[in-house]
Image (cartoon, rainbow, N blue to C red; front, side, top):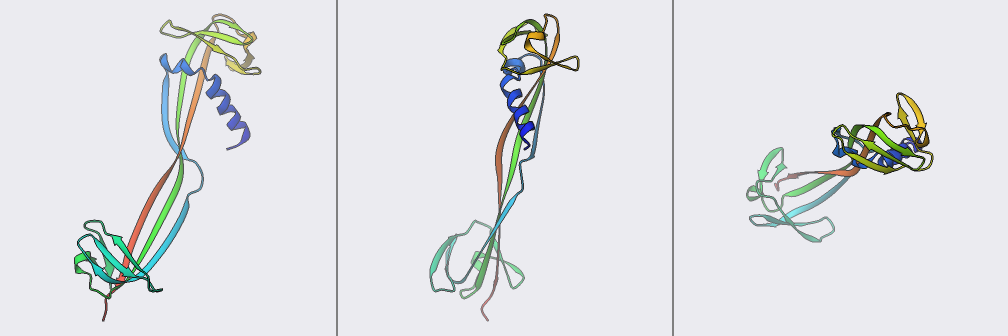
Length: 188
């Protein structure tokens, strides 16, 4: 995110008149990409040496044994045919390919609220909302308000001026998806 956009969002979030959301606001919510997805693939190979109702034991190429839990109904593709755990034959060579994708996302909530200047000073403003409620807000040094398309400082605000405040809240998160495909070749 560019520095100017990030700074603007920070100012809007701080001064974006946080309580404005309580007074007849228009709110939109969206999920947007938060960056490039990363994909990791891991492959595990082994020979089926034992199996139960929801587990199997495989011997990897280096001779180590490993127990795997198997989800109910899960199938492997053995010699091109979907095969359930109870149909697998001992000696089947299995290959599990697990792909994990991590996709950064941002849940963005934009709230737009309108009000009227009741009173203003260089460091504080009191806004009257359409429902008649008054709220006071601290104004950071150098912050500019948009009034009728013009940028003005808090000390230029006058009672009766119409303000529109935009508050943007961004909540980043990561969507993680797993895809596991098990293939194999039956013993001859």
